[in-house]
Length: 167
Image (tube, rainbow, N blue to C red; front, side, top):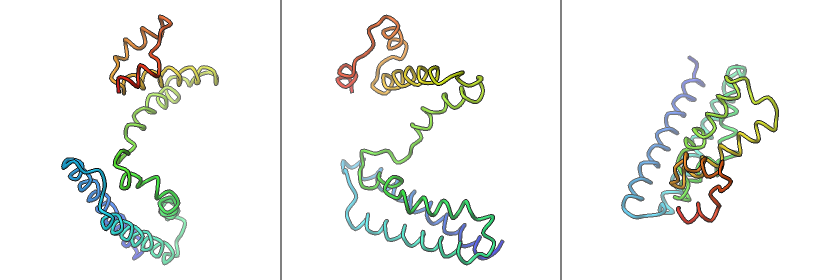
């Protein structure tokens, strides 16, 4: 393992630790009824993030063998470019800290696409997406998915107003 690899790994661990620390602090603040970090805390986070990204860039540039490190370079570039997207949850406590729910929502679609012989054509994919979106929205708003499908098949699907009132 060369020096750049070591720096890169150490840097990744520090970044992971920083993010975990912020998630923990946010949970404690929310549990105490708070809804935001102190400005000093977000400033400290931004400073540390900048430091770790700069270290990552230096480690990448110091390494002569760029072939194996394209993934690291791309990750650093994405982190810089989409910082607001990745870390919006630090500034807005209404945002989730992860996108796990979004990924779970997409999992069935990806499985159907890969395993079940795909969708056949674009129309079938659009229909599948429309029904899945309806079911998922109803589920997230506390409606029974079977009842939602029954109403849909009966020609009386839940309306947006009904779903918003139940939120």
